[in-house]
Length: 412
Ligand SMILES: Cc1cc2nc3c(=O)[nH]c(=O)nc-3n(C[C@H](O)[C@H](O)[C@H](O)COP(=O)(O)OP(=O)(O)OC[C@H]3O[C@@H](n4cnc5c(N)ncnc54)[C@H](O)[C@@H]3O)c2cc1C
Image (cartoon, rainbow, N blue to C red; front, side):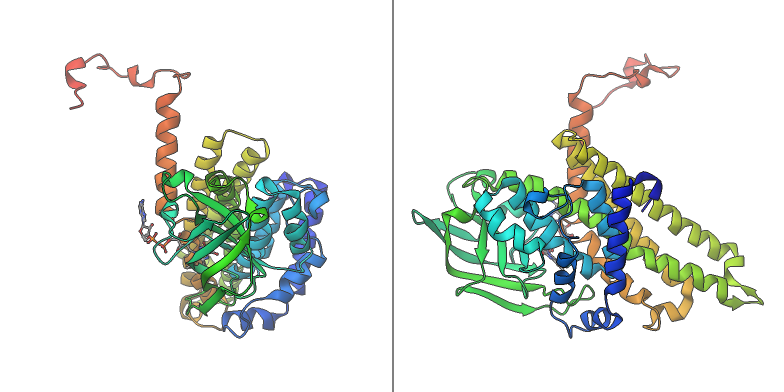
């Protein structure tokens, strides 16, 4: 993180996050990657004990009353352990709890948020279905209204933390006749009979986070477990996309940072043609590019955090968050690619962790909304922003010699 942008309290939490990172045993990292650990409960328990989960939430609910800049600072540090540590850290405390804090009742905050932030219980977020993830409002899981409760049926897949979760945040169709945006309800669902976590996937990277397919069969969900309004999941989804994508961006920087550090140090020791390879511009310019990309990525994360913290318009936030997620994830994938290239053949082996970082980071542009979906949002918001607002700046189009050539300005 950029120290000069942090106040003393933010630096203190950043240092606490660094201490947690140092606490993690090397073997835990290796055991996650080899799927020997299916879900790193001990890590989340330790994070909870240290009061590092959900730092932006009010103290009343177990947070520290901090802001998005703090969250991003913490997420970057956690990401340095490996992408999956930040995934499990973020999914429960930063996504599921965000939805409950912003939209849920005090009953739900007391019952689920407080113990989760203490590291005593765990949660997973269930949006994606076998049918598809991008077309979220096409959700086919159903929750049938039975008066004081719903009966939930359906399937979700690729759910990080499914293996370890005590409860699930589930989006399901509650009004089959309404238009898609008014048809879904967001529910807290306990792990109970009828909730079946099917299997772990053979993942390319990000292993050990308990990613599973979940089948819900006639699961009774009391109405007090509705997050927000009945059929009002659209509002919950909209605010959740901020931590989904901004949190993802911040942690992605952390996951890429060690790759650049390792490759840069390596380049000062490895020799070829009688010189250390950092003396070849072909190498040092790649390091320069990676350093620039990471700093640019972090700058964007910081600006977007500031926009969210200062309550900018939902449209601006949606655009900035999407731009940040796309730019940061693609930049960081490039950083891990550069790091491997600088290391030569040894970078492709498990002698160094670059190959794991490279595999892990491939997820970044796919999950929490693919980068194509980010482009669709950015395009939509920018067109709206430019075309709908009254022009307040100079008319740049007129600043050309033949600007009045009306016969040449034919558009169809
Ligand atoms: C390891 C892992 C962990 C995950 N964790 C979770 C989790 O915890 N919870 C959860 O709910 N989900 C999770 N996901 C799911 C993830 O968010 C989805 O995979 C993602 O949203 C894409 O959905 P999909 O895989 O169904 O692809 P699809 O939606 O089928 O998309 C396939 C391709 O089509 C493109 N596409 C689709 N629509 C458009 C469009 N309108 N414009 C342009 N291109 C388009 C996509 O960009 C993509 O390239 C996880 C996935 C993985 C792999």
